[in-house]
Image (cartoon, rainbow, N blue to C red; front, top):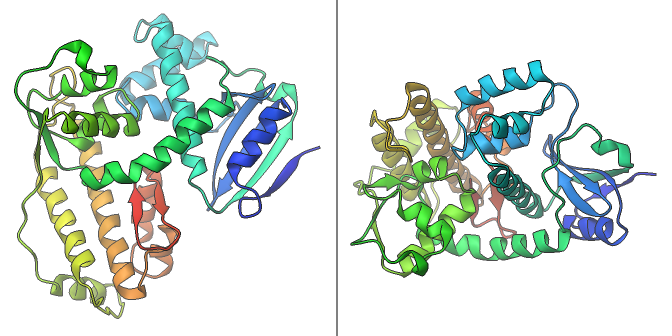
Amino acid sequence: MSLEGNLTAFGISEILQLIAVQQKSGMLTVTRQGSSTKLFFHEGKIVSTRDRRRGSRDPVKDYLTRYGVITRKELERLTDIAEKSKLDVTEVIVSENLLTKEAMETHYRNHIQETVHDILTWEQGSYKFIPGRDVVNGIKLWGEFNIEGLLMESMRRIDEYPQILKEFSDGSTLVKKRGRLPKKEDLTSNESVVIGMLSEKRSIDDLVAHAMLPRFEVYEALKLLNEKNLLEVAKSRIPDPELTIGTKLAKRRGIRFRPSKNPLPLVVSIMVLLAAGFWNSRSVLPTFSGKPATDTEVTTAIERNQAEAELRWFLEMYKATHGSYPSTIADLETAGIASASLMERASQFEFRYYLTPDGTRFTLL
């Protein structure tokens, strides 16, 4: 017998704890705004997020390419090998010596932790749990993870992330190490990875894309390094543009533009958009290995940054018009502010949008 309901009645943390306490095996699907996340359980522990059905997207593949663990070109080759050999692509990654077994297990766990963190921020949506041991048959597992530990770490991240983003709110911000490297024992492993990439100035977005660490862990390492006075942070300096830009853009989209009494959010959004355009015009992106990025990687990074800048701009326009940020980024299209093509790009780049309960602040990742 399945268990289902909506997240307004029971939060996802309560559902996860119920599955853990009763040591259930099965599949939990959490759905919000047409997108869904799946968690697979074995005797109350999370073992996977991967749906084995043909045509389903593999979130582990997305994770590995998103954070620079493997390139998309490598993934295509590895997927082809996996299909011909009947092995799982993660097994092929290890057999090809791209990752050790231990490293693969670490990335697998980090992916599951990030997934739990994400769905815990969902205040609306629905869930459905289908019990049964057979739902995990055919899925390559790299560990079993206690829900209690995942929840505790996720709650810590939810508490700390907004404070970190106050320091590093713009992904185009450039950072560089200050002075000589400290002793290795004075740094965490994540701090060592991040500061080792900062012999020259790099954007935070570039660090996230190549550090082989989850986004939160990169941001947390930057915060700790900054507290130790080991970072130089160079934020973009863009002159204040005229607010008539907002009026012109709104007219072009057939919207009556009503400026907010407080123009600061709109000014900030315009500055973000211009800053992104400036940095995206650069033709070379450094990588962790020190080699220049491929044309495809450069194009993808530029397109993602442009899409993010547009989304931030339109979110500020929405607030200026309606008095608060939208409950979902899809509302931008419904309100006639953003185009369907931008929403498609937002889905392609897997942007995650979180709104505070009072509607006054948002996080776009």
